[in-house]
Length: 219
Image 1 (cartoon, rainbow, N blue to C red):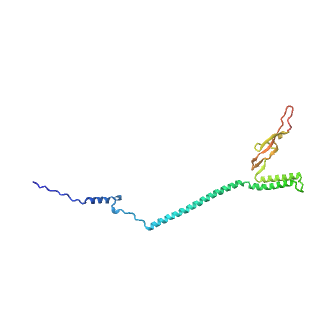
Image 2 (cartoon, helix red, strand yellow):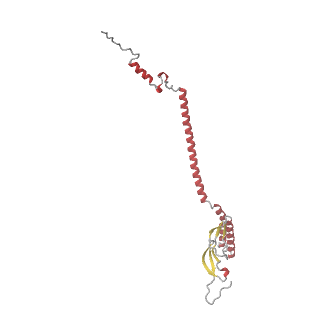
């Protein structure tokens, strides 16, 4: 009979614990061995101080720019208020120069009226003197208005113009030349720099109606 030979198990090179440890060592980031992985070095004191200084500088710059913005905003608001005030004053005092020019005319008119009224021990002046004084005042006033581009509309004996004239009535005339023309000026019209400021109120001439047996007026 042949003898049975018992076979002994071969020895393993590593046990289970060593195998797990080897697996843990292999499971490093990027598959690198554990000895090749390095942790970030803590920041040095000088680096912290530098970053803190940069932060303080940024805060300081922010405060400065905020002050600049607030001052610019305040200046803009003041400019808007000043512009609005100037525009309001310009509207309110737009006629200041004209009124200053008219005041001397009012002075002369008051003087003429003062001389026309009788006073204690002083008789009233003659009618001719009053008319003469008023005419001088009227001429002075027209000259003053002319400085500002105002001039009267020439209406008498002129053909009726609906742009410049406004008819307030009609009057019979004896000649055809006066027909359709202004024969009376109830109120003078004025132009301002060649633009109509106020139309003239006028009476327009017309020929009388011709009845049977009457002849037309001579031209």
